[in-house]
Length: 536
Image (tube, rainbow, N blue to C red; front, side, top):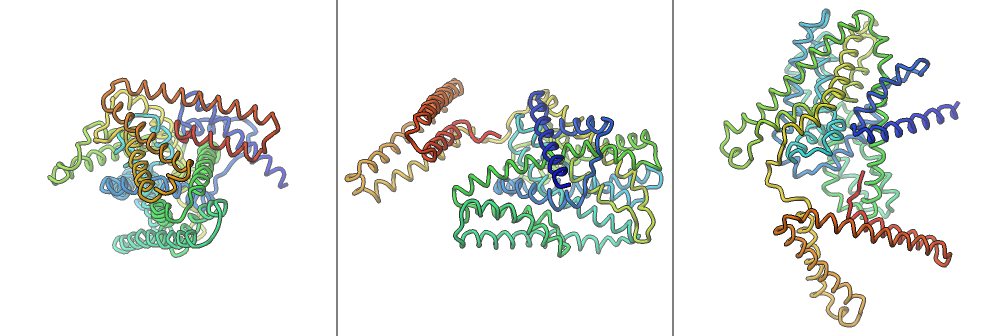
């Protein structure tokens, strides 16, 4: 039996990876392609039915996804754009829930206002992975990308809180607004404090205990689960606990993680999150037969019509809200007008169309119980699930495929006065080298005079500084710097290839130990990574 499960798991992972490769060849973002592929596979006769367990999504998949996103989020940028981030993550989620509640109760026969809030809470949070994978190769302002990523960190928490309150209202038939609002803030604030406290404890442990990079990497994989489970145990927001703890630990990671742990853990996390996201998106497509089979009280045509109308209302609500939060604060605050560049009409439109629904929405819909406490079937569960599924597919596939074309058509330009990344890197490297050279001249004069290796290290720092100075001057004065820099990188990579070939010949000589040869190969890998970056 266990061999069958292992074979199925290996086959699924292999199939998903082949689909991702095909999506890259077709230049389609992998979440969009995997959902389409999952839909097509589900139509093949004889394919086994795959059902997503919402408990698995929330408990197994959600904590690491949120923790990884928080870890690689810039706290400074997050805090700089906190106003639009929180207005989208909390304000827009609540507004969407209200609008969908009234619209669905008026549109769909049998849907009460409480069920409408349930549907609104389910469909209010955009999926971060889908938007990021579509936009990462597009030229959009850094501010817009920061706001989208920051929103995605927090909106899952607010939407799940709305979902829980709406579900309780349907299950019990009671809803007191004042009590719900008080509980909302308690869940949010205590979730944040729980995440910060657990993050601090783990950071303290990692800083005090003597371990190695393998142990530290495993501990970073455990941390988000501890944060999420502890917060949920006390009925706080597990999502906000993971996000707050992840942001705090990332910001202070230099205090408790070694350089080898940061490199190793970063690679492990990138691979793990990619695999989780890929599996989830293909499983979304494979859910179609289950969703359709559950349609008993409504026709599929009616379900599609309801989903299209409500999906349009959700998009329209976001467009209006994005323009409102982009310009309304500027109308009332001279400080904002003086300190922040105008977003223009393009940026809010991109922010609106980049909101695609994904796994959290589907998992929330699947988490609707089959029965009420009285033992009766949960009312209209089938249409709530079907509408959610169609909205996910329409936004992921429709908006996802149109968004790159839309961005190219609008010809968006960077509105923030941000230094080019290459210039930032050169300035930072120059300051680091200058600090090292100053320390070398002040603290190691005797060693420089007596030790030729130390003297060589000093000359290397001086050479590096001259090179960086020339590079900055070239960036500032040459209009053909990009071409020159590209040619220089090509030559550097060609020289590394020559060294790799020589390393292979040394391996065949059987004169040197494999461990030493592997270490040298790793040095070449790091040298190449300095040139190309860590490509994903």
